[in-house]
Length: 220
Image (cartoon, rainbow, N blue to C red; front, side):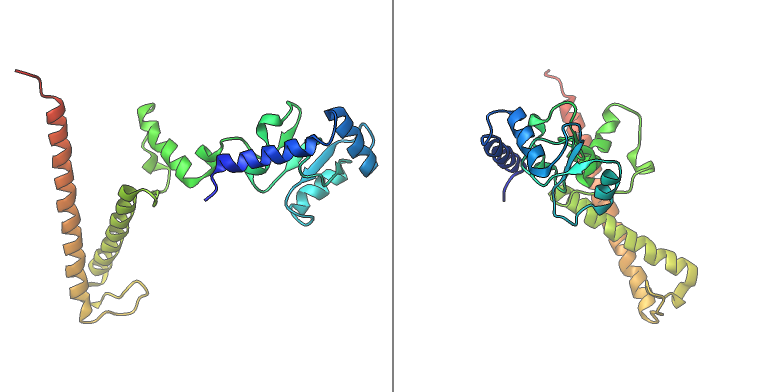
């Protein structure tokens, strides 16, 4: 598996090799504008990802008089639009260049990053993320994977019991098909699963309390 940092180094290396063809940025700028017959005052953009990618962006810019080039490794552009964040050498950007990604944006633009940051809010603000953000789990984390499995089971338990309370022995399954003689057995299994979950939660709570007591011990 190629890591993000290694991909960024590859992109930066490719850009440097492209720039090494020229003696300076001014020389590269002049060469590119001659190649595409652009005026010195033309605003330039580059869309990485193929000729048919982001047609709406391309058409909007062309309508405004911008000019497109296809030198994807060139740093001569006013705006660069890419599919991947790693296609942009952020450290080489000038202040007046625009790109469609932010560096190190995974903290807010991925589900895992956003979830972790929202959880950390409790250390800074009196905020309960469960009141406004859907329950989310990082399935690569063994503990969170178990939390997801427990959550999934408890939602199923609640659904079975809710249907039984509403319809009694005539309850159906999740698709409304009557369960008949299996209705009572389904309720029993749901209750057993719920009781097992509650017992496990009580054990975990006792473990937490024991840890707190240990931390509070002082030498005699």
